[in-house]
Picture 1 (spheres, rainbow, N blue to C red):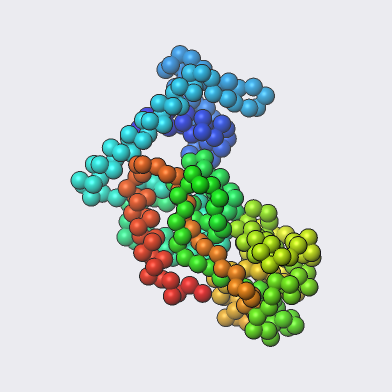
Picture 2: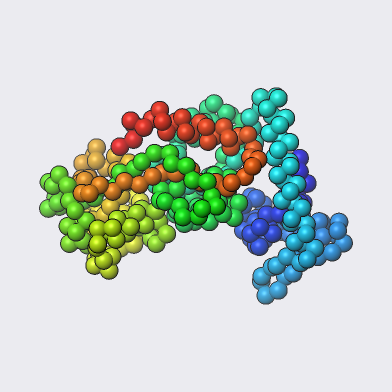
Length: 303
């Protein structure tokens, strides 16, 4: 219902990129450029300065951006007010989730949500924790679900559930028979870890610091951006790793990996993170409420 030209302009202005705006809006870049030019023709002035493949808002562009912010807040307030009367819950929600959450927690949660609210369209973006927090900060997504603490005090962070980290080794490994290991023992073996910015890696490093262990002592043999790649590398006896117990349930049942508890335990929160907005589309409020109940009701199902 809101002016499409204004929506497209607002996205480009927020991201300062026609390419990123096209990706977020699921449009082609020429279509985004066309919409912005239409708005510039309407106002009979340039809204962006384009120099050396970079764009910046002109004075007029900054003024339009400020009013657009207010317009979309009022639009959301109007939508929520009418839908409270009609009881309709629909719309598009853009979610972001870190890899562990997206692959091992969200599928069943979102499946149940879609069954209850079939008129809500959900788009999911997957990145590491730092990437998801950045998307929330830039208003590129409505809601993020991350696997590490969030330091930005300007965001709302709400814990969903706790997750246990374990050492994973191949069945023939000499640590496989242990009931538990310390982080110091883990450092004695080649280590396979996630990339920098990953919540899994950040939590591991934080606990090493708390234990007085210098991270430079780690014999990092591989850095991989995929949980499946890490599990395959450990199965091939190329090193050990520390992952969420929830991510290795299939391998534990098949007997291709062994999970060993870490002492003291390494637990981390899976959390919802979003902007402190006064008005949100009703579908997002319903998703948050549904997710809270889901996490509470299924807590015993989580490893």
